[in-house]
Length: 349
Ligand code: SAH
Image 1 (tube, protein in one colour):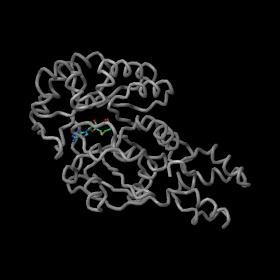
Image 2 (cartoon, rainbow, N blue to C red; image 1 turned 45 degrees about the vertical axis):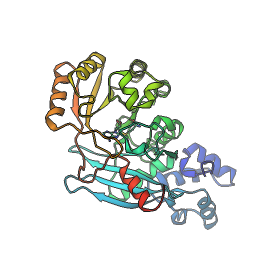
Image 3 (tube, helix red, strand yellow; image 1 turned 90 degrees about the vertical axis):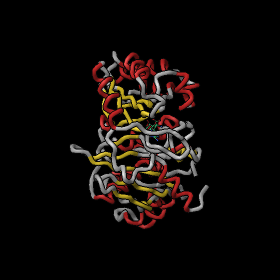
Image 4 (cartoon, rainbow, N blue to C red; image 1 turned 120 degrees about the vertical axis):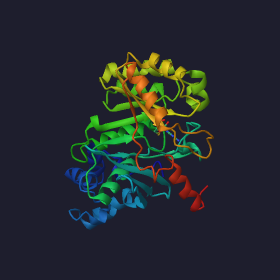
């Protein structure tokens, strides 16, 4: 299935080649691209500007028509909505729509499961199934937009999966989603979150794609971070920070850092001071996340006072710091839990 030709993964130029090789006029390529990425007509059957024969042929290479929303859960507290989206092979991904004062945003999954093994993260608990293809990331946005009748122009790659572990598909997806003939999303409105795959951060910098990146730090001491995040055994914090400096030099995009605060694990003054040490001279933003407890990780989330104290201390010491707003906490369950619970119900292990 991974090797099947899917037209929705292709750029306009690649589509031109496909159409010409199949005896069609090359202008059909743009029509197909716009049908999918702009007009959201997923099923070739409904592409009435194509002949019946062409529609039949296109149908063989079209998979996006098989992606669908199977469940939506609405928060009663804010306008957050969680979606479960079924892909053409029956796998399920989780996508979250969020509304802010100034804009709307969507949190996308980039893989089915995850290989990274972070101890506190639900996405990784049922291990890794496969990478998402570019069109499957597009589909998450398009289906939610169709469902809500709006356009979404801001996204974070912070759902299930490690986006830099699916580098080629993710960067191709970014190409597609920023294409003027399609969704035309601004590169500035795209943020990718990574646990710190240094070689890929450098590659991203060299390719100067210009998206925002944010690093999941979670602990400022290598020997403790390793315990929470196995990737720490491969890349040290110093190597990650060097890669961030390189990224900043190349792109001039301010780097984000995420820090999930875990009670009595990484929330004392020792951690704050070390973080100040690491981040104070960097052009960055630190985002504190309150641990969302999951069954497999037997730790507690800190209370609001602790989070405020942490944030204030960092700001006082010249590290720009915010606390991530808790979106849709009534529907939350940590990221990835909804998918796992649904798989279990459906008898998928
Ligand atoms: N693989 C990417 C995206 C992961 S999800 C990454 O590692 O950055 C986005 C953020 O949520 C990451 O910072 C991740 O570490 C954090 N996260 C995962 N599970 C969490 C939980 N149970 N509570 C709080 N934050 C969590």
